[in-house]
Image (cartoon, rainbow, N blue to C red):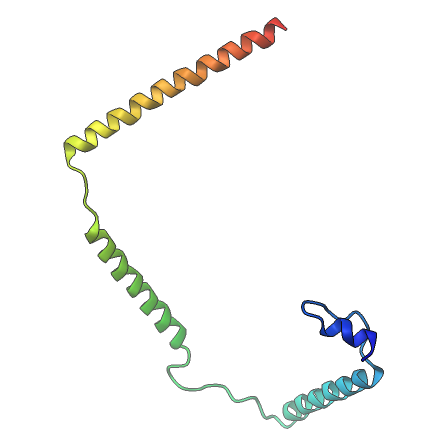
Length: 122
């Protein structure tokens, strides 16, 4: 086995050598044959077959609608599982959040003020 083939067969390795000239010629011949088929079919006026069924254009739209309906059903089911807190609990937790925000703001503002005075003294 040649060194080029061994490196190409190693796991995760890619071949860095160029393919033999015979492979290039064969691939060019295949491309030319495919191009010739295309030109022959367009010259004769024959067009590629399209799916002319009435549901062909509707299929992606139908899948999208089914997906949207499934999402809405799942969302509704998850919303039914939620237990919402009562008004008193909501009010108490809101007061706690506002209080902690004020305390944290004063604390960080105080640290900022102290560091500012230290830097001004230097």
